[in-house]
Length: 279
Image 1: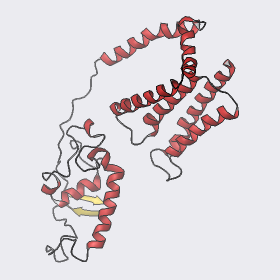
Image 2 (image 1 turned 45 degrees about the vertical axis):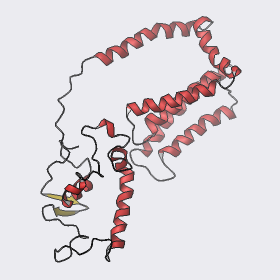
Image 3 (image 1 turned 180 degrees about the vertical axis):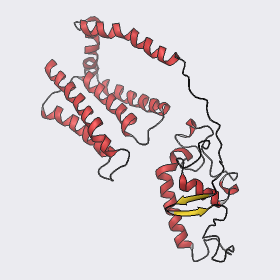
């Protein structure tokens, strides 16, 4: 029984190492496709873990099963899920995952007794070496974590942040240079640089215009809604880590008050193309 548990642990470590250091880097940072991606790779890893336990009839003890389930959940939220979630959100998810794991191991008295057995043997039973290592090393671990948390960090001063940074005179998008001072919206201005009578829901440009609106919506939900929110209100799942917070697009004081050429520059360049002082 002990040999099978040891084999199961060894195979588990090897599986995690292979998938983490060999397989997952293939799918980062760019996803190859809908079929070959990091989530499918994760499911394959879980299938491999289940597979070798079933094929080799290892039947790992309940404590090892519960530990594997908990670590698999942590690995998914911390290393697989993209984009990477904030630490506070990770703690929330892991609390829920831990509750689910606890319910799994306490589903009946026999299962819970099997789960507690190695813990009891470590505390008062025959696992003396494990007791010495764990109880002896725990104070040092707590001390190290406390020391590391209290250690002063000499970080550089925080830069001033501005919501609407000054735009450049020109910007290059898809190989074409635009002068922002004179750039106009082709759906609002005609070829003679005059405002159109209707915009554009009542004119012939509607179909083409809505095509770009649909593409923009797709890009927004792929890249932007994590911070700006699916309601465009600046309350996305990651918004609380920013100061200032992400822009509230439904506020009439944001997009409605800005020039379209400025918005064109902000959206086309995104975060990486903005000045250092911008959000």
